[in-house]
Structure formats: C-alpha cells, structure tokens
Length: 499
Image (cartoon, rainbow, N blue to C red; front, side, top):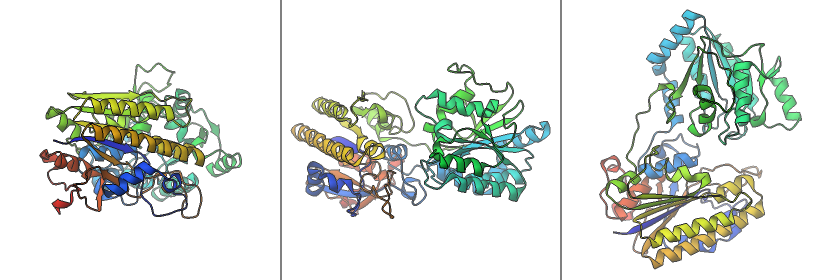
C-alpha cells in the first residue's frame, strides 16, 4: 500500500495571465519541476461540484471540507438561498411560533446580519427574501441591525443598505435601526473590546445618532474609514433589544459568528458585562456547531470523512499545520468534528509573530513533516497557509520572498518523501497569488475562482486533465488500493483509467 503525504499550499491557483501572476514572478523551481515532471490535474474550486453557486470562490473552510468529504457538501449559502428563495420557510414551525408569539406580546423581531453580496458569511439575496416571507407570515414589528462589509465584497455598503430600505418600503414592514462595521460585529480573534462595541449598540443603544445613514457613510468615507470599520450608528432613538423581543442572527459562517454569539448567549460569560434583557430569545438561521443556540433550518448533509475512514481501518495519520490554519487539517477536514481519531497524531506549529515572512515557522513545519515521514505514517496531511496570508497583507517583495521560501521547503520535503518511499500530493484550497490584479489593473488580494493544481509524484500514474476538490479523497483511496466507503461510492476519481 502506498504511503501518502498530502500538502495543501493555500492560495496557489493556475492562470495563464502574466500581469499580477506572482507564481511566475517568483520563479519557483521545485514546484515548477514537480508540476512538469509528474502527472497533474486542474481542480475547480467553485460551482455546484463542490456545493457552491457558480462564481463564488471557495474559502479555506469550504475547501478542506471538500477535501475530507470526498463528495459534494452543500454549502450554507446554497442552502439558505434555496430555503429562503421559496415559500418553504413560511411553513417552518419554529418561525411560525416566533411570529405568533411576538404579535401576541407586542414584541419586536430583531434581525442582524452582514449586508453583502460576498456570499462568504451572508448573501443580501436571501436576506431580502426572508423579509418578504416575514411579511407574508404576518409579522408586525421588525428591526434590522445592519453590519457593513468592506472585506468579502468590493461594493459600497450603501448599495446594500439602499436595497434593504427599498425592500422594507415595498412590503411596509421593518426598518434599519442600527449600523456597525463587521470588524466589530464579526471579530474572530478574541478582540473582545470590539465585540463589546457591537453588543453595547444592541443592548445599550451606544452609538452616534444620525437621521440618514447616507450622510454618516459619506462622513466615514471622507475620513478614510472603510466599511468594515464603520463605528456604531443608530438611526432611531432606541434601537435596543428589549424584554420579550427575539434576536435572530442571519450570518452563516461559524468562524465570524461564534464570538459575538458567545457573548450574547452564554449566561456564564464574564469577559465583560453584556446588558442583555432577562427575557429575550436568541436564534440563528443554521446550527452553530458546539453552541447551545436554537436555530431555524436543519442541514442534514452529514458525511464520512477520509480521515475517519483511515482511523476505522487502523491506518496511522499525522496532521501538521501552523496555528493560523490548524482547524483546517482537523475540524474541517474531518467533517466539522473535534473528535480525537484513533492512531491520528496532530502537530500544531506555533507561528513566530515577529517573523513577518514566516520563514522560521515554515522551517519548523518542514522539520516536523520530515520527522513524520521518518516515523512511517500511512497518511500525512500538512497545510501551508503563508502564500495566501502574505498575499492578503504583505507587499510584492514580501510575497515573492515567501513563495520562494515555500518552494525551498517543498524541495526539502520531496527529498525526504523519495528517501522514505512515500508519494507526495501537492494541491491548494483556492487561488490567490496567481491573479493579484483585477480586470482593470487594480490590486486584488482576494480569493480567486481559478483552478488549482493537483500533482502526484508517481511517473506510473496518468491523471484526468480536469476535476474538482471533491475528487481528491476518492483518488487517494483508489491510489492506495483501498475500497471507497459507501458515502464516496458514486464519486469519480482523477485517475485516467477510470474513464
């Protein structure tokens, strides 16, 4: 049975463009040689094949879920647009009870969500549809707490606020009562002082009072305040959540929802005082893993990950990543599970924060990978995130230097792989560094929808030219001569002999 080392280098896509293509600028000898000398495929990272709408780029979470699942897992944005894009939600028992309860008590439904078309944490389309459904269901009082984007979407947030205002006017229900930037409302890095700013807006009404959001946004723009950092604004005297009201969180991405929801929902939360009313209920649209919060819509799409399968077969595994992406090689790769798998060792490599190019961290990851190769694990998974990280926050020279250092580490790991009779798979979760300029020639640091490479270092193997991320797991199993589990049995592999 072949032993496999799978390396995921985040942010490495394939593009024929010369301008803004830092893979070509960096002249990566090792990666280029491996790509040219061995069988390779191009993997799609968007569209229905991986459970996303067409044109929506994957993120690290979606991609690692697809890698581990070995089949299409319908993503949250798709589920919500399907459910809220039809009258199905109007038959939802929980939502109907919410509407009846509020109308009887005179309470208000408070909606809070990111107003954006980025479709990474929310989608303005399902939010608009939801408002229409609430009107159809007879809801009488509705307040909306808008969170402005500036990260997932390049579109000015005023465009989305205007769209929501038009929807409220058309159905004669609801109004925008507060606005706050996502860097406060959706912080995920334990900056609790930022989260407090948002919850104080919700429960204390702490924010600048303005008559029109257009003038407030214009002032922010003149002061070079980006949409994600718009400070708390209230559009009415008292937008707060009160006794008897119900608060519904509209975003779906756990990573940027968990912190604020913990502050609101956890009765034992002590990091700061949350002045929430004693009698109010909190709901989310979809279930938030490992949080005891009621939700409206079930997602029953469970899967059996390749990692769990290896464990059940008593095969040894090693998972290696830096602190930044550690959940990607564990929680997401294993299907949203934190369970400790039998015979699976995990290695978290601390990042050297003073090392702005992450060179020392890369060396430490490389050393750990080589140690794991020498320990003879059946399957080794390593994630290297720094091309993507530097592309988003560094300058051109830093990005080139980081890419070149990654390339050197790939060369060292490949030597160890060859010496210890492993086969190496190199792929990526999504593109970024290959297209750092948009169609107008402006800097672009966001995830792309370009295909990513899939390389396997075996001269005996022929691969199909194209595939998608969900084909990786069944390909690995087939190559290792392991029967596919029933959950992957309908999936095709990238191996050419399959046809």
